[in-house]
Length: 508
Image (cartoon, rainbow, N blue to C red):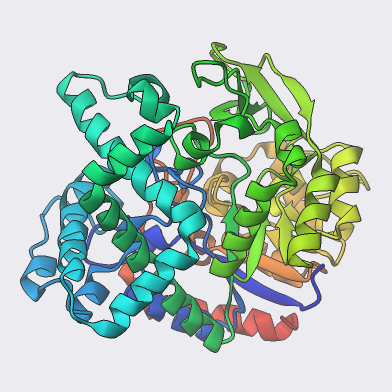
């Protein structure tokens, strides 16, 4: 349950400015924390930080525990002595400052990260080496499997590319003995990939070393981090490979059912995510051990956890493998009450926000309210239907234990959305505001901050009054997402002062 009346900004770290083609945990991240302080903000919502795979989405990660090495700052590695100034300054021209071009970024940055990791292996810095050894011991429950998975994946991915197969996965392309984790195969691969395994562990050490340093700085400035716990994991992940019995897989380790959502606001054919569906009975039988570890790991990284697709903990939309869309699925019940009780018994009360958007039933609302989790209120959704007590997104219907958003990472920016509204929507907006909005983004920001919701969060794109060209993600699409970058000039305007004024006015 939320107790403080505060506000914050939504910005994924990849969107930060900087010279290396993608935002990272370096100087620009610290400068953004300073901007939040100047703007009177108390929260930074960062979205998932996991190692990305297909389509570069952090909701499709190689591990639900590991961090994305692309977020590691080369500048900070240089300061630590892991890279030279020449290495971090020799930047290819195709690395755009305006958008993240993942192909060129990966081609240039990953070799530099691996160089730094190799150099660290030979380091004589006793303090950092000791910190690395302690990190490996502390995170061994997931790190050992992840590092081995990525090492083996590198071997087979290289082999698949040589054979012209770009879509090979561990359950279809790997040798059967290692795909099924036979003990002798595990031992053999650990020996043959010893160096690569350590490189992968060092990259994770770099990530956590830098991220926790940045988080510590933010906390010292009075900024708490809102992180994200995606409900599902990618099939191509160490999670599924290491715990196949926790998922609905067939004898060949292929999914029987995959996750998604039925037709909704974002898509008339639904969203076919393709993530393997959990075997909830198996997870419940072992006391939800994997989930407890996952919540514990997430809470060690962030201060507040936004649980993605919360309704999936009551029932998840499951589609038989082979269907081209998500239209033909069924709701499969999940033991949400038992899960959250088990988490609470092991870890205590956790600071959780529930992403309760989509097709929400009374049962989902009951699960949310029984756990006193605040839900999300998105202003852009408020004007899709008329006034009345059933329109939960209109501010006069909000409850204090909620989070008010102008929009989310899945929405268009407020300006982009407003440009596409119908005449009926515009009329409703005009009537609700009491006038024709002129400074649209900021009038929506004002409405979110003035609401009774104890937490209000605004995407940085709305603070900067940007249009649909700055949209972060478009659900049901796989091209061009997660690539927006904030212009370095964001600090030169008066947005921080405007936010600080509203924070004071509305007691946030």
